Amino acid sequence: GVADNSHLSSLTAGVQADGSYKLSDAHMLRFGVFFQNERTRSNVSSQVFAVDANGNQTSDVPLTFTDIGGRNGQLYGVYLQDEWSLTPTPTLNYGARFDAVRAYTREQQVSPRVNMVWKPSRATTLHIGYARNFTPPPQELIAAPTLALFAGTTKQTEIATADPVRAEREHYLDAGVEQRLARGLKVAGDGYYKNKRNLLDEGQ
Image (cartoon, rainbow, N blue to C red; front, side, top):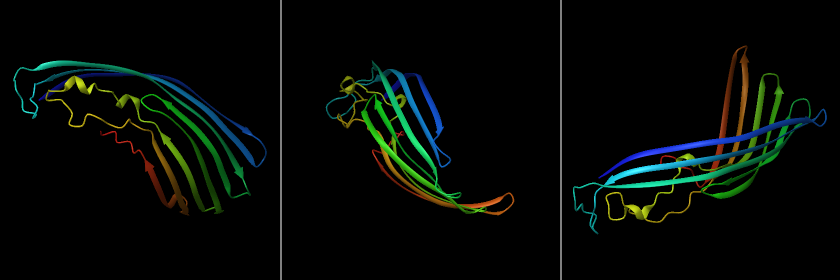
């Protein structure tokens, strides 16, 4: 009962800058900034049929509706990280990143992260780390359809309200070991734990 002709477009422009500075023999400072502006447009032409209050089709003559929308959105990011060589073998990386999104959602987060890499021998490498992640919803996959436009048609939605889309937030813990058995041959094992909130389901 629905036939759509969709035209979606996205134009993105941005800038990213990264740098590093050697504070001392033991410390390497890394830093960077990020900015992106995105303009998305949607033009959806739909052919539908009229229905009654019970959802039963009342006509076989298609009706045509056009839903046009657009949005400007921005992403901002900045990070600072220190690589600390504790002794000749362990290396500790720690820092934080700040991200903000101003589009279909207006959110921000400070994301700390820390990880350690240790080489107890030339053949063995161990690592463990924690990071908090912030993933804004991809703007090009989101549109704000005019639900009232399709009331009384075969395209009307069963649920007329919805929570706004949110950025995905994650706690991520990872640990692993890599062992070189022979020249050109390595084996590795890795395990991780993720705790996500506002999971992005791009299939929806």
